[in-house]
Image 1 (cartoon, rainbow, N blue to C red):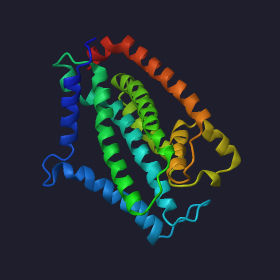
Image 2: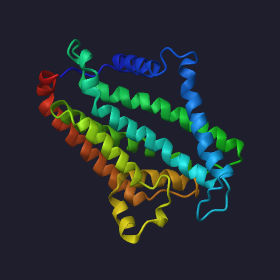
Image 3: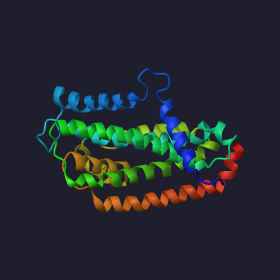
Length: 258
């Protein structure tokens, strides 16, 4: 197994981010334009024009903020899993020619999605500031939430990437699971409208715990559910360990199959 190379990871991350907008006139400016457009839709269209309201608060922009606070982390989370699942196949031309560390491909995807996430969050904060939104100390927990969600995404992505080398349907199955997972997570709807039995099952949905934490911080100025986050943190690190052990055990076969 080759060792991690920081310069290689940085280089492919820069290339990955640049290739998204290759050939366009505005280039990397689209990385800012898209978050602005999306957040405008979430906050202005849903909140002010369509008049969507969020139970428990009288603020006119509450639903738009609720929606944005859920969709921004979900996009980074789901994109990381989806892209990691096919990373070994997509980078086959590099793996078979260069003695590169396979986990580097997971890390560079995580970093690339992090850039998009941070740009979206920056735009989100600017819009909130212009609207006179009050920022509270609960926001200091955002780095930990992002660390946890991306570590979980990389753990699941690595597991899917290993399986995808031997069973090529895994990439499509991952896409289906993520689509269902999105609708089984309270992002566009409110947790309280769910039946009691479904709400109890949501305690086993890690995405629900993470997304609810963001929404409680941004919308309700409240702390996230610490007990659930502690449990999820332990589970995430165990899952990462398991995925890495599986990868190390099958690494030679992965390279041979590619």
